[in-house]
Amino acid sequence: MARMHTRRKGRSCSKRPLISENPEWVPIGAAEIEDLIVKFTKEGYTPARIGLVLRDQYGVPDVKLATGKTVTAIMKEKDVAPSLPEDLSNLMRRAISLNVHLKENRGDVSNKRGLNLIEAKIRRLERYYKRNGVLPQNWRYSLSNAELMLK
Image (cartoon, rainbow, N blue to C red; front, top):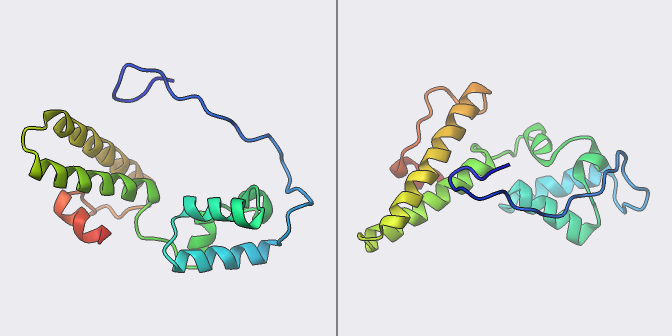
């Protein structure tokens, strides 16, 4: 599949092995994994970071196979989920940092285009999340509100 804003093809990367059940060598159980997820969320980790820590430090290859639920589903169940989805907040952080760069470097037109493309992705995600009920219908993206939400 092609990239969204360029004429290049997509990135190739390694794929996870196709397994349908949790391996027996996983050292911790589902309840312990859920407790670790809550602990890491309270420490400020994102769902992707939690998955990496569980994989690298605790030997859990896949949270969904081990618990039957994804990291974000467990976070919602335990009422510790962030108010914004992770991909939307990451894009908003990129837009904020790019806007700070553009205030210092007014003539940087290529990064001005990059900011426009990032904001287009944010608005596209905003429509998607409103349609699926993740964001409230009156939620609107603006750069000033993004700075307030993420800081």
